[in-house]
Length: 132
Image (cartoon, helix red, strand yellow):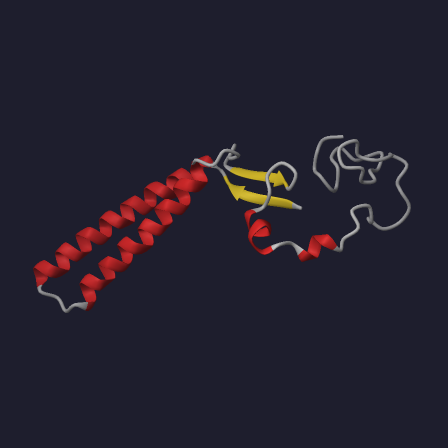
């Protein structure tokens, strides 16, 4: 199964964006307290800071992960496991037959990487996406 994950650049930018959102929350609280606004207005600032801190931690972890390579990483499960499959399991892929692509095997043979049937005019494998 293929997974599309954010790479280092987008994750790092999102981490910095979360830091800016946290600073906005601080300024919001200070402004609300100086104006003598009701308690609900400073509470919004606290919510900004909490959500920004959670986002900063998540995106920093993504940006510093060992397998992040590009703007968007399209990875196979044997290269890097999908975190959602690690957490929740993958029932859909367990029942699938990896060689079942419908019809007889094409005259082009099979992919040398994953064994999926490949046509003569195929430049990339339909299953693993590697160049044939």
